[in-house]
Length: 77
Image (tube, rainbow, N blue to C red; front, side):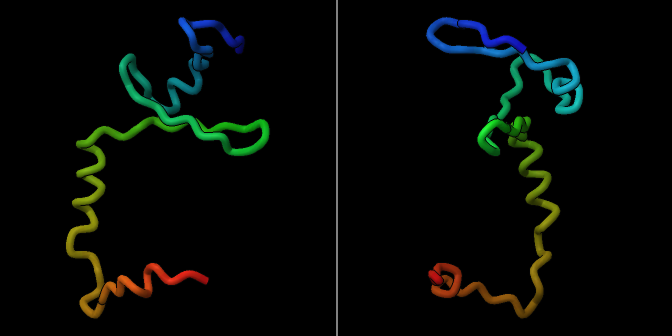
């Protein structure tokens, strides 16, 4: 891939294989994270509908004896 100038920014075109694996379409949002000195991760940003579907799967799934302890959750080691 080649880095190109796009306005005041730099841009690269995603290879077709990446577009296919992530099922990307024009207008989709992606997240790019630095994973190492010479590595990056590219992820498709989930749509609100997808996030809500995932959250609904967990509704009512906590054990009956579960108790959230705010102080314990924020303890530092």
